[in-house]
Image (cartoon, rainbow, N blue to C red; front, side, top):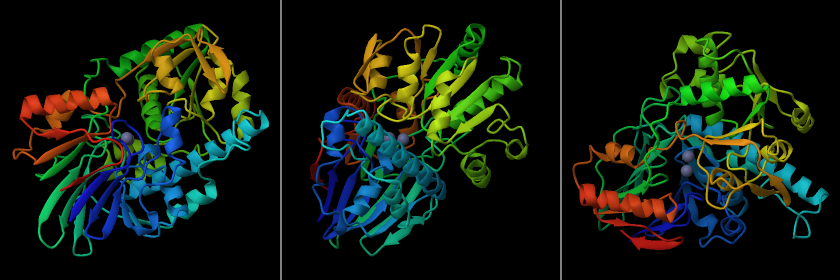
Length: 461
Ligand SMILES: [Zn+2]
Ligand SMILES: [Zn+2]
C-alpha cells in the first residue's frame, strides 16, 4: 500500500511536510516550520500525527525555514534516519537553522525580560544545540542521480531554481504489487536569475505535487533594477534608511548583487549596506564553491570588489551591534530577518523607524497571511509589534520583481514539456485562494485532474 499524507503546506504556504508510506516504510519530503498566524504557529508545538522515530529518511527540497525549520524538533522527537539534500542546501540550511535558533532564543529572552509571554516562560522552538544536532543526520545528494532507499523507494533531485541548491524530488515507489512515480515540484523558481539556474524540465510522472504560492497571480512586469534605483536615489536624497526584511541567505545576496550592480553602472552613488543577522557571513564562499548551481561569472566571484562582497557591506553579528544600528543616520540600507516580520531583529528596526516618514520599507519576499509583514503590505497604518502599537508613517513599497517564486503563468510554462497527463495533481504550498486558482488553470489549460488537500489529509496512491 502506498499512501501520501499532507502534514503541512496544504491550504497554506508554510510547514511543508509530506509523509510517504510504502507498506511499513515511511519517509518525509521536507520538514518545514509553520509560519504566519498564531493558529498555524501553534501547530509547531503540537504533537505530530505520526511517530518521528518511524520515519526512515527525510528528503529536503531546499533550505528555507518553511521546508527545513522543523528538523531540529523532529530529531528531538526521535528521528534518527538520514536527511538527503544537495550540498548547498545542507550548507545554507546549517546557517539558516542556526540563524533561526539564535533569533528564537533572542526573541524568547526579550519576551521573558519584558514579560510579553502568556506562558510562564517563553521558549524557543529549538536552540542552536538542537540545530547542530540535526546537522549530524545530513547526507549529500546530487541533481539527476538516482538513489535507492531499499527496494521500495528510489529518488532523484531536479534543479528547481528558486534558491541555490533548490530541488524538485522525483520518486519511484514500489509496494510489491504496483510501481508508481510521483514528483514534488518543491518551490519553483524563475527564469533568468543569475543567482540560480533556471528550473529544470519536470519529469513525466503518475502523480504531481505542485506548489501554488502565486497560483492566482502574475508578477507585475516591474524591473527590480529600475525600482531599486528609484528607491535608493530617494533614500540618498532624504539621507534616510531603506529597511528591507529578508533572511540572511538567499534574498539578501540577491539584493546585495543588485545594489552593487547599480553602483558599478553608476546608476546610484555608493551606499552602505548593513546586514543585521547573528549568522551574518559573507556567502561569497558558498557561491564560489558551487559554481554549477548558478550563473554568476566565476571571475566576478574571485575579484576583491565583487558584486556579492564589497567594502560597502557591513555585517552585524552581535546583538549590541544590531542595537547600535538604531542610531544609524542615512543614507544606508539595513537588511534584517525575519523576512515576514514574524520575529527576529527586524522587529526592533520596525519599532524604531516605522513612524519616520523619511524611511522606506521595501517588502521584497512572500508575506504569509497573519504576519505583520502581510499587514504592512496590505497598507495597514497601525500594526502591533511586541504588543506595542506602531504607527506606519514610513513609505511601504512592495516589489515582486525579486520574488523567488514562479507566478502561475511561469508555472504553466514550466509544466509545458509534460506531455502525459498525471493521474492526479495535488496543489499545495499556497493560500487557499491561490491553490484554487492554480487548480483551475491546470484544469482549464491542461485538462488535469487536481485536488487541493487539506492539512493532515491522507490519500492512497
Ligand atoms: Zn522556498
Ligand atoms: Zn516554500
